[in-house]
Amino acid sequence: MKYVEFGKTKEYLSEMCLGTMMFGDRCSEAEADRIIARAIDAGINFIDTAAMYCDGFTEKILGRILNGRREKVFLVTKVHKGVDKKSIIESIDESLIRLKMDYVDLYLIHWPKKGMNPTEIMEALNQVVEKGKTRFVGCCNYPGWLVTHHNAIAERNNWSMLVCNQIPYNLIERGVEVEVLSQAYAENIAITTYRALVLGLLSGKYRPGESIPAKSRGVTDERIGNWLSQYGDGINKFLKLADELGITPAALAISWVRYSSAVTSPIVGVSSMNQFESCLQAFEFDLTEDQYNRITNFFDTEVKEETGGAYKDIRRELRLLKASDTLTAD
Ligand SMILES: NC(=O)c1ccc[n+]([C@@H]2O[C@H](COP(=O)([O-])OP(=O)(O)OC[C@H]3O[C@@H](n4cnc5c(N)ncnc54)[C@H](OP(=O)(O)O)[C@@H]3O)[C@@H](O)[C@H]2O)c1
Image 1 (cartoon, rainbow, N blue to C red):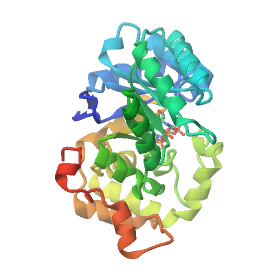
Image 2: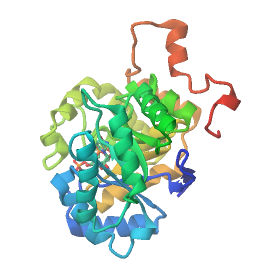
Image 3: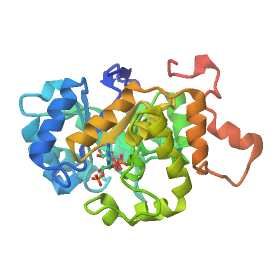
Image 4: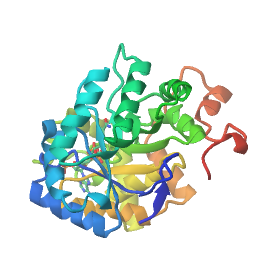
């Protein structure tokens, strides 16, 4: 497992971050325990959870599983309730009780909310850091400008700044390429990505023209069926290439995400040990530029903006700034 510098934190974390959203849901506590033991053995020291997963039950499970292994992992959790000061401060206390821990390593705002107050948010997050309940703070699902805006407020007040933005990114959902990735790259904000497999769509279990397999997330999440119809041709080509390359489709989908220099750590969410093993392959498989372009072209999903030409390219350009003005070492 490769270790990557996590934004400005000076921490080196495993490139793979283990996602836990299915723990206590589609994945039993016993299986989750085995997966975490195997992940730690494989060198993974980075685990993502959230207070809202199974309404707090996932954190409770993690509290039990990580008992005695706390120091082996960099643990992330997220604000459960609103983004007002009271919610931010109460939510971490409730998470720490469920996790049976004194602190987490990274505490994230889960979603921006209409009417949010960045000064109140950054002051509250700073208070959580000062009380020693988290080491670092960050956000999820933020547009790039909002990260910059929050951090400008924090910097003016000498408060802890957001070190990470956690966002959805995969072969089909590529909106973050427009500005989120470029902003993060230029300001050395760590990017953790979720939904690399498009909810499992690119794992090989869903086949165009075939019915949705029983007991999969596709049974309850209609986005999977919709995307399966819309991108059937691309999915067939993608599955064929995975076969030719001798890696699992899941690993190929993750390899595509980790190809971007702006992506720090893809989060891998699994519901079984077999799935975990099959995803792990991705971190030993570097796509060539040619393979990357081929796969990208299987799906016509590049974001088409209102303005094309040079403006479009500039908005996507990671290396727009002079190297000395870019904070990321690359
Ligand atoms: N910050 C946020 O707003 C946010 C939002 C969502 C997720 N997340 C984080 O990101 C993680 C991943 O998200 P996600 O679950 O949506 O990601 P995903 O990678 O798109 O989907 C994971 C699903 O794909 C299937 N799968 C995974 N590996 C497989 C394999 N090797 N073979 C066959 N099927 C496989 C499983 O579905 P089945 O259970 O159907 O088998 C699994 O639940 C979560 O655990 C969570 O930590 C964060």
